[in-house]
Structure formats: C-alpha cells, structure tokens
Image (cartoon, rainbow, N blue to C red):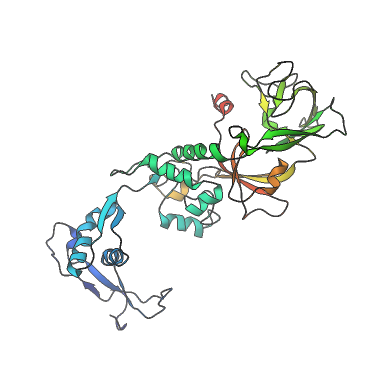
Length: 396
C-alpha cells in the first residue's frame, strides 16, 4: 500500500478492536485507505492517507490541544477517539460535544458554501451575504457584535435554529454606540427652495454622534437646491405619514422647516421636482418661535453632495431552514442583493475609511466596500437596517 502497488480501494488497513462492539465505530475501524492523489504539500509522495477518526486524536495531541470541542455528531466517535489515544500512549485531550450553530436563513455547511461560491451564486467567500468572517467583515459587522452574539446564544446540547434577527440586534446595539452619523439619499428627488437666495451657500453644523458630543461636529452645506428621498414624499399621504406632501411641512434634519408648495411633473406624470419654501426662523432643534413639526427627513446639497452606489443586502435564503426538503439552492432569495446607483451622499463620505460603519441617518448602518469602490465612485454596503416605524404601519 505504501509503495503504491495497489489501486484505489483494493485494500485498507484496519485496527483490530471488537467486531461485536455495540458502538459501530469500534468494529475494527479503518486506519488507512489507498488514494493516488496529488497533495498540495507532499505532491505524489504518498499513496495512503489516514481516516479522520484515526488522525483526529493524534493531531489534537501533537498540537497540545487540552479540550477538543466538537459538534454533536462526534459524540458516538468519542470512544474511538479515546481508544486510539490510549493505545498509542500519547497526551490525551478531552473531547466535548455541543450543538452546532444553525443560523436561520443561511447555511453553515462548508461544503454547501463552497458549492455556492463555485457555482457563482455569490461573488466569493467574502460576499457580504455569506456567514463567513471575511463576508461579515466586508459587510461591516464589528467583531464585538459577534462576541456579543456568542455570549447571548451560549452553548447547548440540543440542535436549534437561531433567528438571524438576534445577530442583527447585536450588530445594531454595537454600532449604535460607535458609528459616526452621515446623510445619504438613495433615491433622489430634487427640491428647489424658492425663497432661498440663489447664490447663497450656508454651512451648518451637525454632530458626528448625537450621544457623544466629544467627537465633534461635521459640516453640512445648505443651498437653494437639495435632494430628499422619494420615499419621503407622497402626493396623497395617508394618516400617520408624517413626511412631506402638498401643503405639508417637515423639518430637514439639522436644518430648517420647509413647506411643499408645488409639484413639478413631466408629461408622463412622473414627479421631477418639488418647489418648497423655508422658514428662516426655524434653524436648529429649538427655533426661536418654538414652532415644531412631527416629520423630520434627511437631505443632501444638490451641488456639494457626491455620487455613490449602495448595495442593499438581505437574507441569502428566502426560508429559515433552507435544508428542509429538496435542494437547498432552490430556496435562494432572488432579492438578497439590490444595487442602487445614482445615490447622493454627504461630502464627508468621500473620505470614509474602509471597515468603518456609518449610520446613514434614518436608513441604517453602511460600510464602505473597498473592494468594489473606485476613486470618486464609492460603494457602500448596508450592514443592517434601522427599525422603521412607518414600514410597520404601511405593512399593516
């Protein structure tokens, strides 16, 4: 076998233990099998290779592992693990089994993840939808959120599915404390403030983090033409929609109160822009006249904002347990990635460092994708959403 005289499968080497053992793993298990395959380190020098059960305990012993932590399927293999170590007279690690992590709306099997990569169902191992460390890092998950997640779910002895929302809550909780704030308009709608001077440019101050004023302020540019998000305007707004509509007022975040006076449309009825007026006495959270409105919307300057692209990542699979019957790939979520071009971003985001998550105010947490971005064309990946009260109302 060692010299390569025999073909694959012609012979095996077994350990003589007990063919009558109640544990089938102890019934003369195979130690080595013939395999004429090229090895990435030793080339073609070997034609025999050890079985996992034989190599497992020896590898742990050689590496000085004190506690070998395995998933529950290794419980029946533990007697064989211990038998080999005792028979060889080597240092004995302690094997302990626990339930594997089953995270909802994804798969954790390396074989299946490898299949998704090879079949180009995802862009690679670092695809932000993948449950891999490199994928989570690219998506903007902080390491502290993963540690918090592990502390919360703990370790058990029974298989169960952990809802993905538990992980997302940990990410929100961590990022809320550290993420600097910025404004981004994903679906721009032009707003012309008719009573604001055409040539005037005003610099406004906004906190980098509202709960950590020691981090300082960032500068916002206010002018006659700005962009708001199309989702923040409705021609016929329903009850509890506290955003902009004809004749309605809203506050521009960290800026003035504006009122929609006119809606400009093209021949097809598509809204091109809004004509609004502003109240110059309403700058700041506590304006001098004391007048307040319920709606607050985010915005960016039309001429000073920068263009960008945003990738909205959702759950990789459409069902909680993709393995529940049939081919798991049939349950892939076709809406797991939405690319939005033509976004307008706050100027400070032009210098956003890779790996730092920002809270795009009222939208969620986003992280610069250094791999996909180019000079002058930043791409931001959505890390996780914010809780949206209006989305719940609209859903009902």
